Length: 380
Image 1: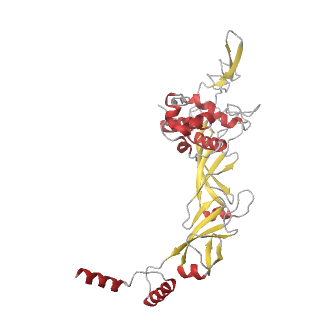
Image 2: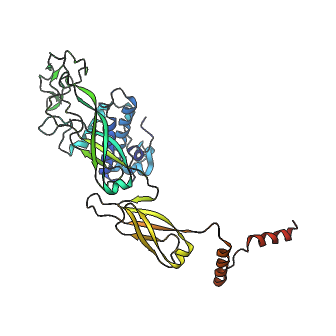
Image 3: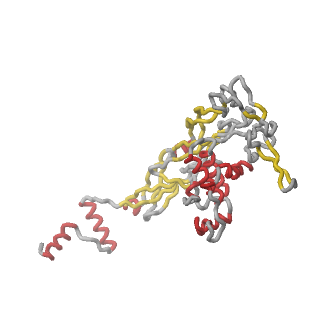
């Protein structure tokens, strides 16, 4: 059966996400759970299919509109077309959608640059930074494992001393032709026997078991620019996996380092702006005051105007975060939270009661006198 999980939740996007955001979200998940990177992992395969189902619906304007209005039931027949049953679909059937992501970037359905050798798979990892590091930019050491060329067979997959042999099905071309409708048209497809390599291996390399690739740990330092947003990625060119064709001439994939920005105790982020709640006393709000406001890079003086109300917002210019592209800083928005003292000295209470009399406002009597009257009434 198709998934019943919310498609927006699966892709970790908002319902307002546009087509490019949907594509980027699917791309990250497809890279992470790609079966070639998770051999034998049934859970990863299920996640891969689930992400493909979500992308198939949300990238189609008609299906997305039906889903937004009626949910999964609508797609199963109440007002719109039924979705595919991805749980029964072979992984290879959804590679076309996966490959479509790269079509706009100069690669065809096989991940091969037009007229050039195959490109290696991209990889993805995550790092966490804090708001102070968003302000200044920072560096992070990243450790990950990638499939790399087997040194024993230099990527051929053949046992040292032997060589791959020409594929008998495609004659070494890596493609075969199929004829349909009584010979009216021809279709060229990847050779099913050699997978497009044009050669097959009789004696497999014992180190990589004929795959030509082995997992290798990798460590590098990544520069994270100021102003980066949570969920954005830094692309490190050429740090992905090598070309899958074993030729050694293909372009390596890239490493995408997804940035997670941790929550701050004082500030909430809103784009390039920061929002902070600040307690202000009754007297400061009433009479006005100058106070020091903490910022990510020191203190800033803020003038509380006379008669400031609870919830009023003051703006401290250029004390937010830098814009990723322009470098221009946002503002710090200070939300006033009127703080009422829980305990007062007798003098403070006396002065406050005198002030209440000038306002002609009724206030509760002093605690001891009030409870004494209650006792007199009920005779306790």
